[in-house]
Length: 263
Length: 263
Image 1 (cartoon, one colour):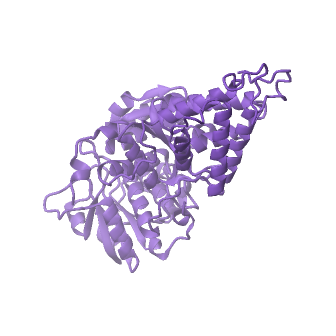
Image 2 (cartoon, each protein chain N blue to C red; image 1 turned 90 degrees about the horizontal axis):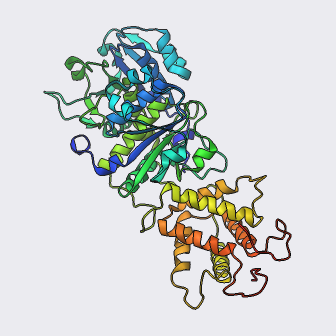
Image 3 (cartoon, rainbow over the protein chains, first blue to last red; image 1 turned 180 degrees about the vertical axis):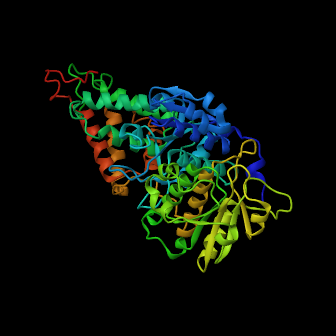
């Protein structure tokens, strides 16, 4: 038996993992999730709008992981929770329409581990009953699914956190990571992607392509597309430069009075 | 994504697995363990001298796995629980003296899955505080350890059941190939990507962003970016629609004489 998995000091990449619980209803689950995290060597817990927190039941269920609870960060939105991350993996309990194919839990953990070698990452869990909203899912570049009994796939929240942290620990300490999906350059941070998406939306509205009254799923689709690509900082800059150029009458190349773009 | 792990009917070998909880103190843990089992497709629960069972708290924690609790077998000794099995895998939270080297959880599950092809097997968990006694350990041919944080390795009982049942399910149903990074829709053909890149290049030249005399590496970079995303046909159409809208004076939304796009 190799002692690597249990005796190694916490590598830097493990410190780059934040576990995000969004809109958790039961404080006991928050405590149990903190315990699950700590058993696998993770300590950064971020809570998005928890229904009840702090709470005595969370403390009880955390058992020896009170320190994880005590240092938990409470934020008002998933965007805030993901600020600074370069990859977020959303856990989903079922397939959804328009969804890109989710990864299996193990593949998702492997990818997260590879990316954590160079930047902050997040593992994102939704509400016990309703899961993550479509808007929240859209903010995560990857989705993962724990393989389960199709007739009863309802894992307890903390149990799902346990399984994912277990996989992530092994991916980080024991298994050779898969090559990163991102390009060779520095990955874009969550807020940089947000900035690009806002710019794209604004441009699509300005051009008449997107009706803000009936937005449909356009932005969701575009977010998924760019999410899959794993954008680099420089690519975000290029795309925003392109968008800015499209939005201007082409004065330089077409010094006419009326600046329509001809093709 | 291969649907094998979630859509396959329960194979015979999964029915040959019994989960044995010995001397469990808290009925809530029994219920939560039943839930963990059922989410992974296992249904045979055997309780050796539970402190309190049946109990309302067990029912509550079992959630939708009340059937697993209802059919649980209560016995007086581990020997009775293991009667008829050909392999028992004991879970241990720490190394013990006199112990042969334990297996890691995954290796233990793999072995159990292999043996379950031809006979009854058991996964054995001890008391929440003291674990399995040396006498109980001695009755199991294999021991396994869930890799954990050496500074805090205390998994909740049901969380350990969840991890082991998760590993066992995967060992029994097979490891799935890495899923495609592409989305769920029909992938774009090579010539469709070429068409998009030509459109993008034309638009970038028309807007003045790209100087055709000095193209640099812009198109190469954009091709690489979209290549990583694994574009779908419909996404290509959306992007080309956007590009076309950017190239037109926005007549519909801005019915002015001079059609510049304002932001």
